[in-house]
Length: 218
Image (cartoon, rainbow, N blue to C red; front, side, top):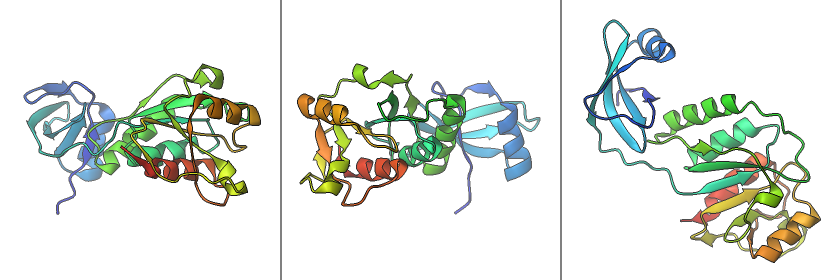
């Protein structure tokens, strides 16, 4: 099968549009891939597209039949040292929305969110999505509604008997490197949040997020 580049072109693209070509995209197609035809996507849809010979414009052609494989899941997470890896993996797993949350044990708070946005765009292009997940503004733990969500519960590593599969939950919360605090566990329990077991070992936060996402059955 021919290796056709996939490029995110924004949320409002339609068949028949002629849009200015961003310099980086024009350079990538002309000098790296050395081809003008590619797949452009955005807003949940994918289109055949073509760069003009002068490299200045992009024509949006017919829509393809490719169905967006992303889901309707929100990942709440504490910023970590490897936030880029966490977002990359979660995007590939189809997460729709990212909600960064400052918890009691959050250490890494100074994140370059502009760079993180580029990472989720690239992960969407690579993974065959027709949409790019949204990264919401950072919130504090106290401002999060903990009802009707699941969370990665590391208490399973200390003997707690927890479920491994959850149905019809639209949001999952993963803690920082130091885990959730006792106060936060109490808040989860009081709100009726569902604790998910990730096994009997303590996992890195980015791996915990990937496994927790895979336990959710939408």
